[in-house]
Figure (cartoon, one colour):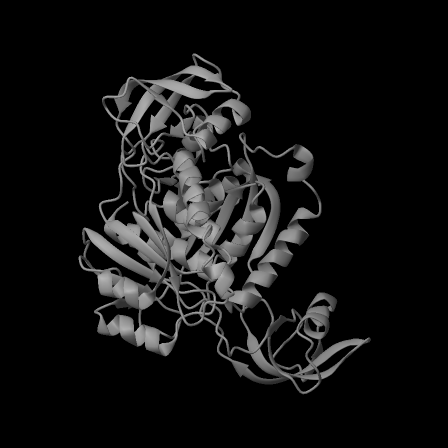
Length: 246
Length: 246
């Protein structure tokens, strides 16, 4: 439900508190000039993707690009108290997952390669994936009001993600019936960071579930109905924020 | 994450405990014969859309339709403890909303006509809408394992919905900043029924929010980020189940 009066927002990764004026990146300049058809003098907002935002004014918009003047800094939309890294089995609906996870405030997204990933290796490892998913994250951040763009990491194995994860609990979303504790374990107390694992369309193997449990992961299911993998990510994040605070 | 071993499920609204054999409706028969290419002898499941399910066997499948034999009744996937009626501002993404709300266990879906609905009146009131959305609900129930298909009602006004709602709390999803209590009020204690209101793409008017508050409705926002209206419905339902139990 977009606010009808909000000023349009543009990403300028180079903006700093010391910048008087800044040139927008080409795709942002295109959006400003050719989609929204804004002209010099227009009031906009600029954010740096790392949590800072300014009111700004368009100074020049033409063939040589868009230059904006940074006016007052504004308080960014608060980030969630828990920095969630979402690692999700790479799948056809990755763009939906990235868009929704960004709007739901995750700090980082990792595309996981797992045993049951249904995509051909070529599609799974396409070098353009990370850039495309990052563009989706940027567009979603612009729309939802975040001044932070989550980092999107290219395909990694579950093992590599577990090996490098240090600082917080691991929550693994499993199908109904896979949660051997017999009930949704719940999110647990609020951590400062968490790793959230959601499987691909084909789900997890027994070995993958066992590996995550041995790494201390908590299994969570989301009711008795079978959820599509892309829906599971959104539902799990919503459940975690309900438990931990938005 | 669909279970790889589940037998395919078909809706047969006329099935009863007393039926020995039953003829599938035409679209279900088409799905069985031409999409899944099942033949006589195949093991399937049949559900009646009202909470009953059977193991069944295909007896005949051909030009004159599909006849199946009902074998043993099976315990259906449990329905949520709270019967939620989701009333949602009619919008372009209604099919996504119906599909996801069905997988999330809602009991009924009402398409709402509100002040900020962005669709032209013709699209909003198209006589085919309810039938199309019902087909989406059926497909989603088949996929998620529910034996119950939520009732999908054609477009109604907010006032008409409030006037006829009797039996439980009303929860209204509002944009960040619209929740004048200053915080997410939360879902409250678990009722047996609830009416859940989600706005259209353009959001609610002040008068609509005031009307719902005067009817005793509870306002809830879903964190400080602006969510697209179709995402808001899914996130709100997930938050409610997290509070009330799945």
